[in-house]
Amino acid sequence: MIKRFFMLVLATALLVNTAALAQALKSGRGEAIKVIAHRGHWNVNGKWSGNTATPQNSLASYKAADEIGAWGSEFDVNMTADGGLIVCHGPKIASVPDVQKETFAKVRAENLSDGKSVPSLDEYLNLIKKCGIHPVLEVKEDYRDKDGYLPAFEKIAASLKKHGMKMENMTIISFSLDVCKAAAKKYPKTMVQYLSGNKSPKELRDMGIMGLDYHYSVFDKHPEWVSQAHELGMEVNVWTVDKKSDIKRMAALGVDQITTNYPVMAQQIINGTLPKKVLIIGAHPDDPETGCGGTMILMKKAGWDVKCVYLTRGEAGIAGKSHEESARIRVEEVKNACAVTGADHIFLSQIDGQTEITKERYDEMLKLIQSEEPDVVFTHWPIDGHRDHRICSVLVYDTWRRTGRAFDLYYFEVMTGTQTQNFHPTDYVDITSVLEEKHKACWAHVSQDMPPLFEGWHTPMEMFRGIENRCKAAEAFVRQENGNRIFEGPDSK
Ligand code: MG
Image 1 (cartoon, rainbow, N blue to C red):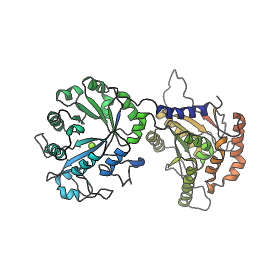
Image 2 (cartoon, helix red, strand yellow):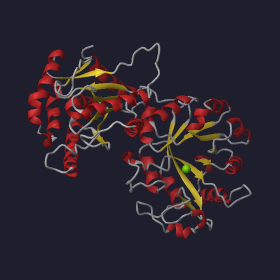
Image 3 (cartoon, rainbow, N blue to C red):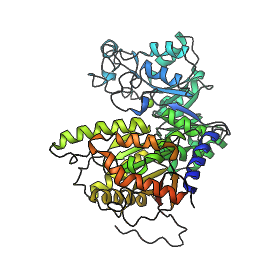
């Protein structure tokens, strides 16, 4: 048992890298699954908002998708009231409430967040010619045309011709069955994919449409449609798949393409290069570092995606200072500590000294962990002299159960004897090689006056765990048993 955990950690991390040499995840047709950036690569660095340089459906986001090596980039084409073709999702863009009711000139006068005009299809086609990425053009439904056939699509076809481009070098997608039927009939060599999700592969094939691009919930309901489509010689795309678990599930179904707002992550999943993720969840600034700092530094060095989560900002931590002032100081100290460990950080919204367990707080923790999708979580051991530590532990444990034990859970110790109690480790990590770095990260919490806390508590703990682990210094953990259950009792709510 001794050292087993650390060996497991490193072995797993190394497997992540060696997997890159393995073959990419394959579709049911035996080809590597292709990743399509949804409205270009606009979600740069995981930032959904405040990302002004590469807005959705911009020339910049298309170029960015090409640069990251995504297989395809999707974009939306709308027709203005006077027959102009623009690239935007609509109906609203900037101050225009409905692009289909506005003139081309008026829509073009609007700027995206990168300061550029709403792009015209002409501009997009000029860019497409310079890029290697596969264009996936969505023909937006034209609700002015009640008879079914859509003038926008004819205009798009004429534009392509004017640019000397072939329709068959693109994928055409649309929620409109009429557009899909017309496109498939007129351009039989072009891959046309229907988006609405309400037709079986056979129904589409009988209409001459050889592709389906459905929301992943449709394939959850009809997983058999993927293999049926392949048997009929059709292509399967899925939108808009952003969660790690959803991407993995759709890949396992064998779809041909995955459309996503997270193309970099999707490519890493397909290629087997996505780093494993660990969350270290503590009640206050300093708890993740003091309890788990050496281990997190080693995991970071081994290629893990490491993130510290702080339940509070240490609001009540500094005598004589207001909550706001203390929080401001301690947030800065967290940033300095994370600069040493290499971890990212998140703060939840609880208050130091006043943490609470309510339905809302359980849900807050659940939401965090569902969005982060960690492989491993470390948190406080639940028997602890500090109420905030106990509460943090219980919130995480509850989430572990509610997610169906979706991650490996380990408990860390802090100031054992006065805070952590009754702690009998199951696993040890030799932190000797990173002891100095760990201490530097802990010392970054200047306002907490770390030297006496280390002299009195943490250093003896590191040394004693080292003696137990037959090394100079160690961190110790209790592993949450998952067990070989023969009977799963009812959860108490
Ligand atoms: Mg679209």
